[in-house]
Length: 237
Length: 182
Image (cartoon, rainbow over all chains, first blue to last red; front, side, top):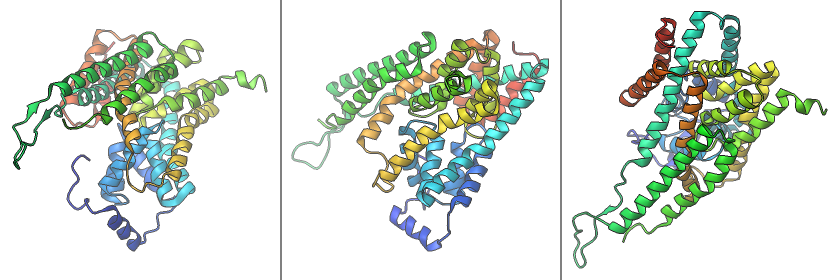
């Protein structure tokens, strides 16, 4: 998603013009079917399948539109993939479309999950089932850890921004990139606060077992405030 | 009516509906520790084993990973619990998203500066909450040395390869059945 494949860089207005020219009606029924299909094929996370189905196969959205809708879906509270379904459904068929897309995303998979749960209730006592599930849940825990570590690596990797090439006065050239000490100190401070927020989230919810809502309510204003301040800081010396 | 507000169905549904707004910055996975605290520790509606099973089953099934909530609801209060819990986690944020998208006049423009601040700022908190989820699930399933090895091996594979995680879950099930874990 980071690098748009060639051909998806068409401006949004041209993309939507092409869509209306095709005049393929995307109604609640199509939305329900499409989202059911992609949800039911989404083993181990639906998002990659949603991208493949909506952008690459059906071409309802281009890569850039998908990325910007995804960004909003992540900012909104609640499950990202459900928010994305609502937004895409609403875009094509209003309230009915949003309901259809969301229902498609949830109905089929939840029936499967409950069916598996019923099977577990009947056969969960068997040693093989117990042991198999125990193995599965250990892997599932590892998967969450992997998500956390990947996010953490992205978050805490050294930022290239403090190294800035400055224009040399009176010429068209720029100086060799140099580290700007103030900016570096600024970033070090931001990193420490970020790590503290991460640690507090872990300790509060994981070790002290405090209610999540209280921890988020306490940390979110600090976190968002810090990020706001960083984004507002002067970009170039 | 007074009695109904004391039933597990009502308590679970209202708790999850409020909690759904705390699932900021990504996944319902980060709600797992709090849901565990509420249904296992506080109310004892289900056991540690049931919770872990719900989680593992939802990971192995297709669809959004958040559907472990459906199973927790089902184990707590049957079919009404399944429907209530799923709706409680999905519908309030979905409604909010719908209203915000409808009101937003920006067409395909992405998030504004405040949206970016929310997304970037909450990322470290999300990482901390995910780690909390790892810890709570690990300790609640009586994790020992072998389980820790599996968890860390999964982490290593996920960081080094682009393999579909489903295969790792299948492998974990096979290793478990073979009696290699626990």
